[in-house]
Amino acid sequence: MDGSCPCPVPREALREAQVAADDRDPAGALAAALGDGPFALVCLFASPDADFDALAASTTDLWPGAEVLACTTAGEIGPDGYAEGTIVAVAFPAALFSVATHTVEGADALDTETLTETVAQARATLAATAPEAHATEFAMLLADGLSCREEHLTATLATGLGAMPLFGGSAGDGTRFADARLARNGMVMRDAALVTLVRSACAVRVFSLDHLVPTETRMVVTDADPERRLVREINAEPAAQEYARLLGKDPNQLDPFTFAAFPVVVRLGDTHHVRAIRQVTEDGALIFFSAISTGMVLTLAHPQDMATHLDTALAEITGGAADVRILGMDCILRRIEAGQQQQTRALSAILRRHNVRGFSSYGEQYGALHVNQTLTGVALFPPGTGAETARK
Image (cartoon, rainbow, N blue to C red; front, side, top):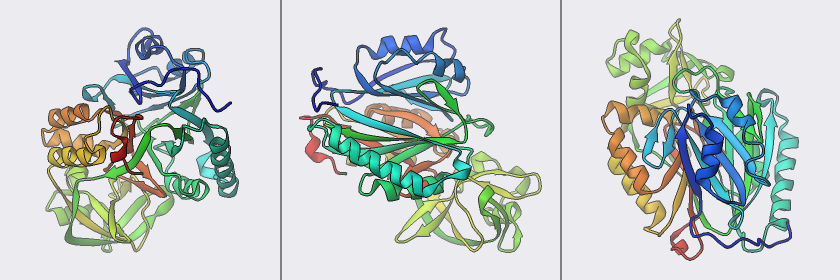
């Protein structure tokens, strides 16, 4: 890049569009709705009901010069809040953003040293070549939510990124947990991740929030398979049976609604982070969304009112700034809990009011951590619209 952009600076930080997953030409409809670029980056968050391969292939010539990234979801967040059966597009105007994207293939065989060096070099190159006005920075990660390797990815990326804040989400497959996919510039991939380094003329604030408060009920993982995120025993008893006993539930009735309503957290330093349960196996083990190991102490958590907490937290993040836009990755368990508590409409209204767009994920990334049951993202404040309230 030559350090300048010939296009006028837009007032909005992001352009957004949404179409039905079964639209006859979803990519074309999204391109028409997004309007003229140029864009530095276009992200597509697609329901698993969409023809993902066809969608990816049809985007190759739509946004010249832009990185076009896509992933499957466990639900979308569009202009009206929570949505299903749609494709949400978020475009980053080139006047406000410069990006560099790297594909991480074969997450199971991650070359940590090479990835660290690659990311560090990409950050330095982007800083040297982006327009001078693009002075803030952050990184976004889209990962295969069924790869079970996000912890390794975030730890490695954090080393290479240094002070550049990272957020991200794991691609999903509704509640089927069978086939999560990513795409970059028309190429579809599995067992992979896409890390995008961004410099911007917007003030930015990367954040992660949850509405959970730890209780006094604790349990110890006594038999686990960390590679599979599988727990066979808790307190030296069959895992599902013991978890259900602590809840006063029937082990045969454990389901995603139970896991959303009765989450467990682990203490890391001075804070607690959710270790969300994904499903029960036929032999009574528990599969988690994130890292788990023998000897780990888990604590049951109690949820606060989701709507009140979300509205308060997002208001604090934006500081009331005008024209703020938020790109967010929201855990599938939050969506499930909202439905169970009959708060889906209330949360959708809050997400709409605070201009949140994104998708429901199989896990979220924040800094060096892979977390669950959070809303994680970045708030973007265009120049001259209250950016002084933003914090990195």
